[in-house]
Length: 480
Image 1 (cartoon, rainbow, N blue to C red):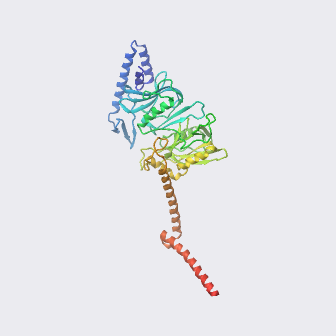
Image 2: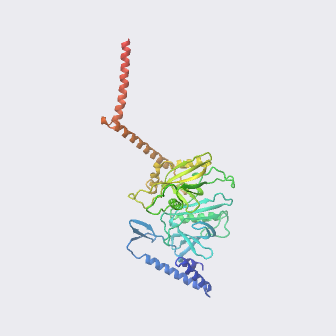
Image 3: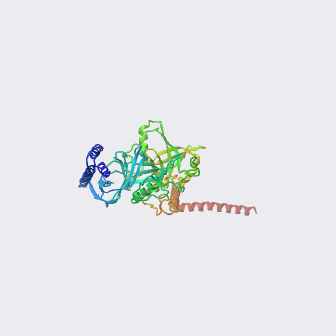
């Protein structure tokens, strides 16, 4: 009987849904009336979808899954279709889940799919009292997913972080928001998964992680967890002796001494969203500090867990440097720019200038580990930024996946080392060419090529030495 609530919530506004629920409860045969409203909602939704499929002035083409893509002004944005309430299948249902983003409240976590089309899947946030749908995130719109231990907590908990793609839109047409929820590392009191049996030792975290992994696998995505291979903190955890910490506590603060850079288009990445919001709220020559945690992965650096969560993929990072390196603390500065759109072509305009984001008061004990991570990925070399962005377009596509993402092999191993060596060789060659050009300008009167000029110089030096040798011999013979 609860299925009709999901159906009407996807079609009618909240006040109408409340009136329908009240009428069903007061009706002598509530099940029959609930079934009637379920059918009405389904037919209304189908009629709306047919109206949307009618041809318009904008050109449209059909994708394999039936979703329409509208082309306007040379840009394209996939349209996401909601899971059909009539064919809704529950993958996982977990009550009393603490959400921090998009809203700080306890909600019911739903993972659902369309039984008619398994590729249509959603993560839903449902009000536990009214069963109203408060937020939904289509699984195919998720760009990054993380499962991270909650720092500095005695009880074992994990944060699930879901970051949507730039420009992602929900079935209702609203921009997709980030999702952050926390699960305890405890055994479930009741079955929460419809597709897997609870095994001995399973927790809410392990069950949700498996179901979410299966959901994302259909779109080529995986859940990222911190690994010792990438980074582990050198600071021991006082509340969990013998266990490694994967985070670094930091303060994000910038002094606003100049006018913020204006963007022609609204920024899409959490990086620039945070900077824009900060610039609006802060007055000149003031400082705003936000406390959080840095996480270092094979794909980028994450800072959380306040809204919005900032993730710096390698494709957006120009360089990383250090400031205020003291005996106990140091500051980390990330020069990054808004990540380019995957649809951007070679003829598109240059990306905006890089902005520096400073993270202060990092513990000096973690300096060596962070510096090794930065150098291993070439993040201290701004000349390699273009190469990192090129990988986004599969120009230098790696055959082996990253270790955190679950692929075999060494991930960023020999192939990356060869690319870094090649980049250094190019830089050295460029410096040599510049020096040669300067020398050529200096001896331009001779008119020789670079090779001839160098050889003639060597011959000249050799000739002078030979001349000196001959003079010495003459002097010796004269004395004799």
